Amino acid sequence: MSLLPMVDRFVDVATPRGNSGKVNLAMSMQDAPNIVSEFNRLWELGDLDAAMDLVADECILTVHVSEDLVEHAGQWIGAVQIRSALFTARRHYDYILYRPVIMGTDGSTVRVRVEFIGTHRPSREPINMTFRQVFVVEDGKISRCNEYHDRAKLEAYLRLINTYPLPPADPDEFSVR
Image (cartoon, rainbow, N blue to C red; front, side, top):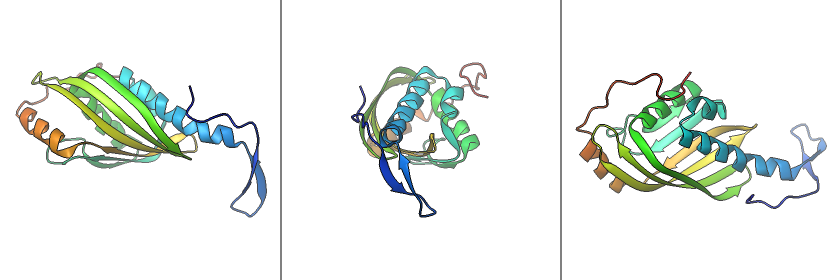
């Protein structure tokens, strides 16, 4: 079920050159949540290649957690850096549940609440958390994503598990180009 009702009409918009044009408002408003839903579906499946096809080349990903505790925290610019950060994030955990729910949209901005249950691979410590993602979609691709966590809870958990090193990466574990 779509979050936005279908609008069977066209609206006038001003183009950058001052010309008036007709734009299908229903299509442009519905693309952003569909793209974000597909990205999260592919992420849950571990298909990083397909998920990255939905990310703009100059996308900016910001993970709002202490960079001292998480390799993939901080700001990542460009699809190459983002692919590396997402691969690092993904290989830390076995996923039991990854349930993204779109909480709202505002034009090209999509707000998502994610319920996550997993196990940290090296320590086998379980984790259960909810976090937020705010995506911006432009020209059919994700151009920005901010991810927000309960910092105190997550950072306490990370201090516990950071005494366990990750095993070497298995290149066949996830689909990464």
